Length: 90
Image (cartoon, rainbow, N blue to C red):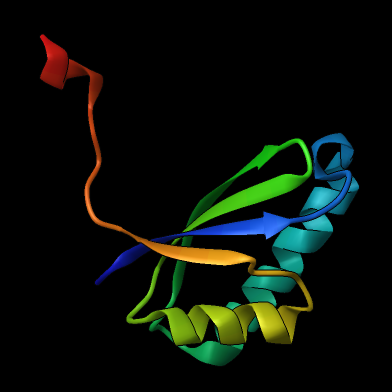
């Protein structure tokens, strides 16, 4: 299944406390449950005013639908075509 990175512009995300982050996580998981087993959230990175999420999904459309139902942005969704590992440079 394709892997995607989603860039979400969320002002102040880098200063969210654990309660705010857990609220976002809970909402995301609830929406995933309504979409079925075609979508899997791997993890997310919070950096400044953005959240970068890694998902497995059959296509971008289901990820845009996840964002729409969850009420959070999906400013950019890009398919990950490869991963570079540090050991490759040895």
